[in-house]
Image 1 (cartoon, rainbow, N blue to C red):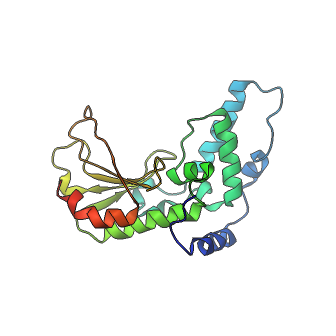
Image 2 (cartoon, rainbow, N blue to C red):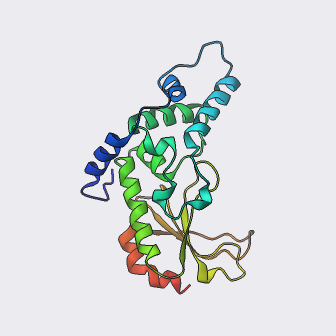
Length: 207
């Protein structure tokens, strides 16, 4: 497992203390086995709706200016154990269900807890928001992660230089070169964490 911050346990404890009770409809579903008479398609539809509700957040996504602003959904605020329980029930019937990178990592045991993922997101945002040219782009569709674009590289390209968090490796940070067109394929550069990003950020801005 990966623990990116020494005091992350304290952050988790504070987060749990501030959470309200689980909404009624979600408490009813978590830990409940579907009725035996339901068909597989019916179970999938019910779980898909339940998960969509869990990812839904108040306010427009485009108003979020940081990862912290984006944490307004049930999966961000409910007790972590309940979030994991529901997520595991969902992927048992919908393996490719959308989910943020940190939830997939916590589910697999690669990340110790949700708050550790939040700490990584906040650290990357603090670094990039303090440099000219970087802008945070909140996720648009349910379950998508926000990312950061380097606006000076957005000169007639399909996608500018981008920094994103990922669960595909234990460094958690990817940098993607500018994508010239929708048909171009770019390979992400895997970094060894936010400290590696800080050390190489000038290199990426010069691409």
